Every structure is written in C-alpha cells, then in structure tokens.
Length: 446
Ligand code: FCB
Image (tube, rainbow, N blue to C red; front, side, top):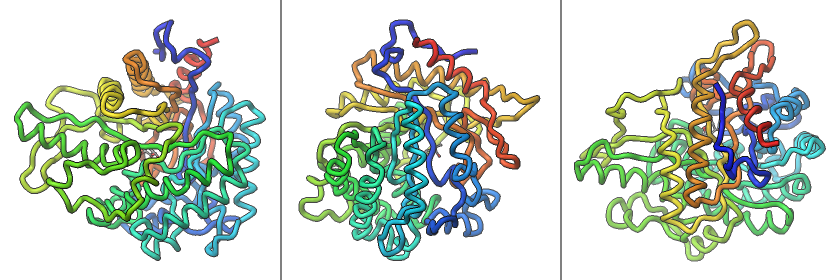
C-alpha cells in the first residue's frame, strides 16, 4: 500500500511544500517548568469530567526535553517543512514581561530546524490561552485581543528571524465555538453570545497583530489557519438543504467571510441575529487586511437535517461509508469539493493545507505499526488536494496531522493521529507504515 500522485502532478514539483504538524500543548509537557504559566487547557484538564480518562498535558510527548530527537524524526521523514506552535504561557509572564527560558527553548528549536534545511511554519495561538487572561474574561473580553498583540510583538521580535511563515491563529472556530459556545473545549463556556463574541475578538486580534508581525518579521509570510468540514444535506428535502446551508454559514462562512470580505454572513442578520457579535467601528477593516495565505485544516464532512429548535442537527450518512477511530467519516471527495467551492465563492489568497489526517486504533506489534487505514486516508486526501489544484485552486503545501501521536484535547491520549507511534510509558517513537509511505511519496519527487 502506497501514497501516490499522478506523474505530472504539480504537487510533485519543488514549488509545493510537504510537511508535518504539531501543537505546543499537545506534545511539549513540562507545563510547570521554567516559569511556564498555567493555560486554560491545564485548568480544563484538571476539571473532572472534561477530558477523557482525566488525561492532561503535564508529560504529553515530553517534547520539551526530547525536541532534538524529534527534529531527527522530522528530518528522517524527509519533509520540507514543520508546523509547530508557540505556547504563549511559556514565553510571557503575567505582567507581560519576556520569559527568557521559554524563548530560549523555541529559539534553539527553530534554529536547529533551519540548520537541517526544514522550513518553519509557526502558529502563534493553538488554543493555550494563559489562564490569568481567562480569569479576566478570556476571548469574550475585547482586551484579550490587545494582550495577544503584546505577546505577538514579543514572539515575532525574538523569533522572527527563523520563521518562514507565521499563522496568527489555529482554527478560530474551535477556540471560540467549541470553547465558548458548545463548552466541549477549554474554557468550557456554553452560549452563542459568548462563542460569537469570542470569535470576533479572535479575528480582531488576528487583524491587530498583522502589521506587528510584518514589521518585526518582514521576510516571513503571514496568514491564519481555519478548519472546515463540508456539510451535506441529509436529503433533497428543502428543509434539509436549508439546514446544511445554516450549518456551513455558522461553521465556515462566519470565519472566512470577515477575513476576506470584511463582513459577517448577511444571512444571519435575518435568520439568527443573536449569532452576530458586537462590532465596533473600524473592526471589520482591521480583520480584512490582506494576508499572504490561508491555512486550511480538513478532516471530515457532516450530514445535516432540519431541526425545529436548532435549525440543523447532525445525522449519519445514509450510505455505507468508512469511519476513523474518532468516528469521523472518511470523505476525500468532500475535501476537493470544499476547496473548489471556496475558490468560487471567494477571491482566495494562496492556500496551504495545514492539517489533515486520521485517528486509528494503532498497535505496536513486533516493533511495527501497520496503519493501512491511515495510508489509504492520506492517499485519498492528498489526491483530493491534487484534484482541487487541477480545478484551479492555488494550493502551495500540505501538512499531515500529525508528526506523532499526542494529546488529542477532550479525547486525551485515547486517539492516535501520528505518522509516528508514541509509547507514552517509554516515550519511544516508531515510524508507522503511514510515515514510511509519506516519506516514499516525498522521495519519489527526486
Ligand atoms: C484539529 C486541531 C489539532 C488536532 C486535530 C485532530 O482541530 O487543530 O490540534 O487536534 O484537530
């Protein structure tokens, strides 16, 4: 079983970047070391019932200590680029002063990647808000956007030299909506009023940070990472078609439309005005400044039917389809459709696929992990990206999620997404069959 692309694919040329991705909280551990402050995810993990098996980020993949070994692993996979995130609570203290030890960690890491010839894609916010800011209202408080700019100023001044591409945020939908509207991620608040206001402040923070990054790190590209699922109507009935439209509007358009067109979806004004945040004069201009790229994270699709109370509700696909270990439908066609639709709807900047991957119930047997499902998943989705490129979407890179198994948020360590297997007892990493297949694809470019 292999991952392969058509011979003439643009993805096999040197202009296309292949990488692997991780995020700080999911791999670093050492969450009280060298002055790192608590984040909302430490608090969430410590709240009974929030994270499966009471798992937390205190050890994770012990990457804070094993990073040199991990760079070898990244380099062994033969990738062009590595996408990582910086933990805000590691590099700045409560008073907004630099924490030199935390900065040192990222400086050494980024420098070593550059020495290996690996491009660095760095996310400034991958969900780990310092808890002391949450205590003041977190993303529901507009002031947090300005605190973010202080943090970004520090990070980009100190580290900008070694960064090829900065992303301000990873998945504002998840931070704002899963965290403040559904309550299933940190900090666990649950109201559309909070969720949508948090989303607005995150988008505002993105816009406020852009000129600061451009000033401090002029040679780097700057963008933002969004996550999207393609939503299908559960049937041809008009109410189900409507349900799917509402779902995509709230999940997808709500985030991309302000960034690219400077407005929240008009549909909501009539339909769900309570889902529109308070916007101050000038905010939308700040949010919609030009960016160098959009990162897109894609995993699965949804099927929705009409519900009288909530307008839409998730149902299972009526067809026989395959699911991953986290219960997400495998739907590569949905990926190319989503990208092609977006390209019709918006004037898109260049795109990078910043995350894509599968959770599988992997087992290490005689030193090997035969994750055939993940190999098939990657093959299907990488080819879906190729289809979107063929259809005219400007996609410049693809990052597999993830380099290695790690802390999967509310699912704790129960879900494995890695191309490398992590034995959490010994912290030994083993390249899975999918990792070898990915490497072989990248080698086939020579
Ligand atoms: C995305 C997150 C990433 C990872 C994958 C599976 O939503 O950005 O950190 O957990 O899902």
